[in-house]
Length: 235
Image (cartoon, rainbow, N blue to C red; front, side, top):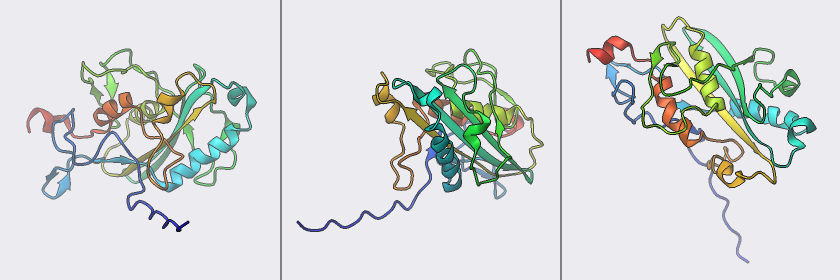
């Protein structure tokens, strides 16, 4: 049989969460790459993951597979996520979990062996708003989501990470980056296994990480918008 030529790895290795920089923001209604006097209005025009963050969720996954209290149930379905940010010259590292248990299931033992900024990871477990009102942007400003969005109360890892960052009410002078990576665990007998598995990434280097669910994809653009209210009210 003729040998098949190996597929060339994707040039773009990062999964995007909440759309692309060329999208129009639903909060401020500017294209997310719009500039004012050469400077981007959005400090976070795109929310991507990174190979280093994928290594962190990969290590959590390896530790998780040893924890029979979580993976011993063949019908289990749950998710984890990590976020890193450099804002106004300071770095932040957050982790979050969703599903399986009401309380965060990631324990200190699940962080063992992380080599990327070890012992600097902080749990993000904020309360998810009960409806589309009263959310926080990463800048710590209140925002209402679109009233027609579905699944706004899902307590997904991505939401916990972004709301957790916003709850810090950081001094927002500059943004170097905000990155996020997620992973989904689907037990062999999970009822919604087919739905959960569609979240896996499709890039050559991303096949074992997950992109955000549809509800998060719709919510994320509101939360990563850091455009000042004065620009929104008086464009």
